[in-house]
Amino acid sequence: MLRLFGLLWGLYLAGFMVNHLRVRRLGRHRERRVRTARFSEIGMALQFGAVGLSFVWRRSEAAGGWLAAAGIALALASIALNHYALAHLGRQWRLRAVIAEDHELVETGPYGWVRHPVYTAFFGMLVATVLAVASPSTGALAAALFVAGTEIRIRAEEKLLAERFGRRYLDYRSRTHAWLPPLR
Image (cartoon, rainbow, N blue to C red):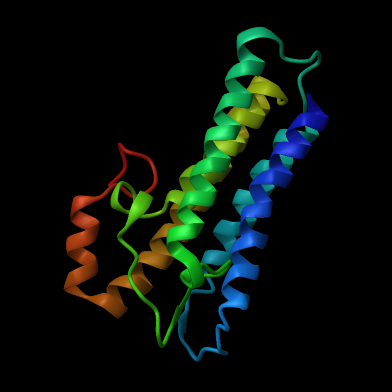
């Protein structure tokens, strides 16, 4: 199960590489950054720490049956959502929270449902890994760290987006969920 989830995470991360290469092929010029939210890097550290935890403290025995199947299905759905979101986001995607001079507000595809579908997919991958690989107590801790990290990142990013796009972003924010449907 561990090897399978290593492969699934590889497929998930491949989406970022494919997007990067596609944008680069289109000749993205060096942009001038307008604003960066460095505080979001704390959130990123918590997110990646949560994923690391899910692989470090594993179940005493491999998950089987419906639990493994649910984890695999959720991972595949998360990979698909991530690739779909990145296709719509294109050159707007950054690892760090940055607003560039030519930044565009993306509201199409999965961005019509949630404002941060890449985080939704990332959380889906974490939950899938927890279901199939991690111990329940580790899963709870990993989920809590991930949620905290994601909320930090979203607040930092949304502050930048609201400053850049003003009322248009506030309207978009009022009609979509943040990254999970119950969260505005």
